[in-house]
Length: 428
Ligand SMILES: [Zn+2]
Image (cartoon, rainbow, N blue to C red; front, side, top):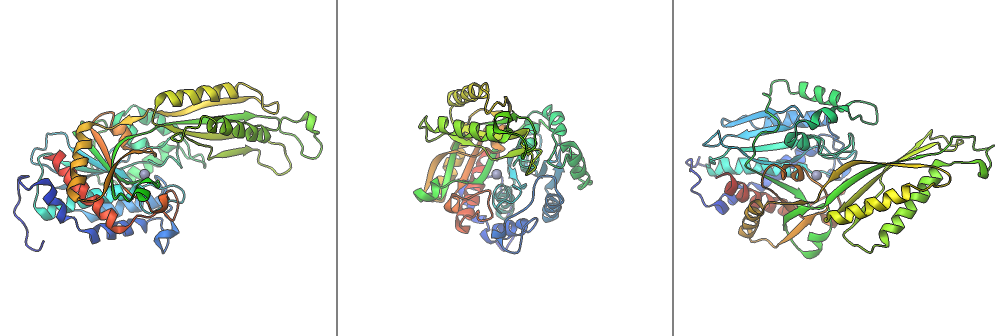
């Protein structure tokens, strides 16, 4: 790719553009992105939660990467960061390619970051191939996909498709009491020169490349996964109310121990869910807050989370009914309240977008499969307003949300090649 190739008007067959993907450049960008919030080694993990100084520094670096003609950096009111690669017909709705660069409190180097940097590599490959697509291509880093600092997750993409949501997002607070709205305003000020793009804009199609975050593809020897949909997710906040009392003076008969009650309820629910014998059901209690949290005071309040996932809505309804029924009882004398804090129906991706990914994957010649996503992604919100699809690459050992998260470099590169062909097909 030494000489500057002539600008083609999309006449290059889509798969041919794949060979312009520069694997070394992609990996170098990923490694550099991991340094924002990362340690000396990649498996030290990455600490880059949403709207933190680490994330802002990463965004500033991204903006410094591309200042070529034909490109424009933008951000919207939800602090979604957008790189727009202009098309031949700028009035047409663009093809969006995105993911997120925020991480869990201690996350891996590829979750989200891969989809964003693979999107950038698509643009660079198209540059090197001399291709200007008919539609603009916009690479997006969505705000707060992870939901670990501010719940719920995917605030940036949900506000993009439904701008009215941003007001309620602004009220959410992190563990330090910082409102999302304040953190958002600060992040927007961190990139003061970027023009503001509108939320709720028309989108022609959306593609997201991501690591699988599970063990299935590796176990089956598959390099690329054509994602057909995302299982449904519901989050609950369960509050158990007891009575705080002195640990040394209060006899068992006089106790309303909220922590004991929570433990009993969690164990009971877990057993009931397992008894259904449904291997595709996912049920997790991952967060528990005990008040007052003192070694010698009986707990007077416990709040815990439930993350429930399944590809079918009926199953989710069934578990929610079970939860309500169990919560209506007293546990160690303590009443229980349940609040549903997120409900995302199972997503079925659009046949046109899935077909574009399928054709691109086949063109790479890599071993591939069809797969349903176990984790939720920004794509599930975008799928409500535009044809959307995803592309997976395998996760070594199925590990994610952990410093050991990793994928073979050649698989990351194969994914970027397939993404390039798929984006070109949708944008031309
Ligand atoms: Zn992710």
